[in-house]
Image 1 (cartoon, rainbow, N blue to C red):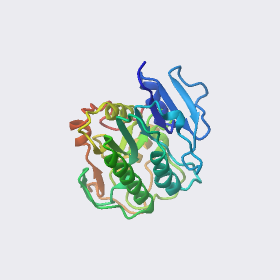
Image 2: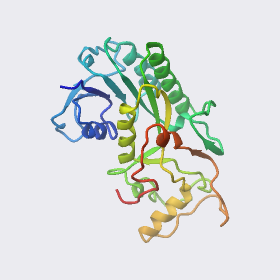
Image 3: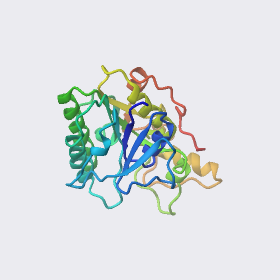
Image 4: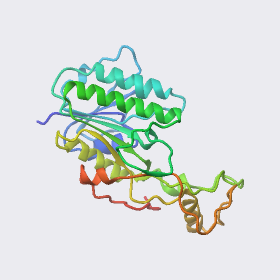
Length: 277
């Protein structure tokens, strides 16, 4: 029987990764419950909280790899979870034969610059949310490097897909004009492609350690997304606080996915934004 894969955080993405794996899975959540009730037969759920000072990870000793994919609750302290919780998780990991650590982070770890940004970007973001992400992934890198454990950090764009359809994310929320002109590029990834990227990261050769950006090829501005969805629903276009000329081009952070294709050989199922799930 193959060694299990630990997935710490079985939410929207983690549960989908667990379903897709053929190896046994040790799923970890604060309550130890599966999102829609009963987990698949190959998934064993464990109740563990990385923010608990008494965290005991003995049950994870058999795992040969770990995917860290948790997300904070609405009122949860992000630093306590991402930075301090991840440090506690790794420092208390049972000594064994971890062959791979996969950290699932966010493109918020990148600065908001009007430029194409790839994994070589060393500038930190100015937002507290982004700096927490950057600090957490740095902690993973330092821990894994010090122990000779291959690691990959997936900086994922905004997740969408079943249950998080684009026409729900970019829906009309009132009659007031939206702030700005909406010409900021989108950096999104479909859940299905995020799962593929995570599985590829688990299977990557050991010489690949570092950051990989997980976004699709489409950087359609937010304004155009709202317009497209309003048109599909037969609604009038939304109003914006600032007008955008017809020849306006996107301005802002455009995240490159070249390493996703070169390192992990991911062929995107949804290279452009899909309005349907």
